[in-house]
Length: 342
Ligand SMILES: [Zn+2]
Ligand SMILES: [Zn+2]
Image 1 (tube, rainbow, N blue to C red):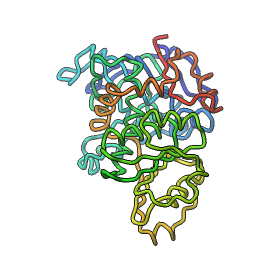
Image 2 (cartoon, rainbow, N blue to C red):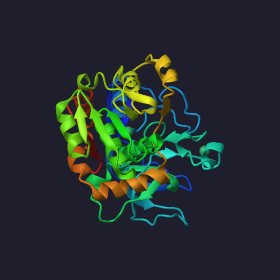
Image 3 (cartoon, rainbow, N blue to C red):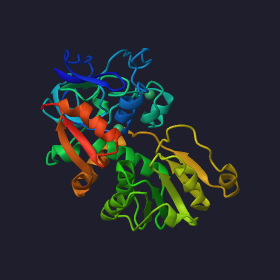
């Protein structure tokens, strides 16, 4: 099959490699769309970070050059007897492979399973014609949902998981810091989950703020415009820019909550006195819970014009390196999907 194979930072090659061999309990999926995201860009620029190039991954067992791509959808082409999916079913992947047996899986926290690995980050993923994984890592796609729309399910599910973790309550004044893809997914998820929120989005880019208003923000602001603001019940940091998590804490009301989604490039300092004296709760969120978040993400995608706003383009797999360069240079503000069939 044709695949994009990661060898080192700045070195991804289109190669012919054997199709992945599925384990007896796994399905084989022909990939139809595979999204690029900030994690791919990090591996391209400064990796390997999560790709187990040098040392064997303790849970996936993978080591060496690897097919990235953790935001993919496809069509089942092989399935074990008794599989929940018939051959031909279109499925969206949550990308995570969880054991289903450990203490945290028993709590439903599959995203922090003790034996977790992620297709496309720690094991071969979706920037290829085929990928294999267990059925529990996939969810069926509603038949009428176009591929280019369904292709956004995994990153939207990450925003949805964040919105769930934020535990917004009706009537809350909410700040979303960052109007990029993840901030937009968080915004749309909050709107879907909780009625009567008053949502403000803050970003340095006026064009992205305009998009936030179209996606349902009540109000948008530049960081300067919010300088003295300190009355949000809930602040969600989704930009990962340096200093923004501290700014979120400043802007949160006494007794409020702050959720960290974005990851700054290194460690940051936080105003701990303010956190403690204002009894502000600081929470975090990572990735998604496939069986809970992917179905709702697909439902949101079917009912909103989200893909029209956030999909930049669908490109042939062969353009992956050039596209990663463009993403790294900040020249693309929406999501790019790859089509491994082209
Ligand atoms: Zn991603
Ligand atoms: Zn587990």
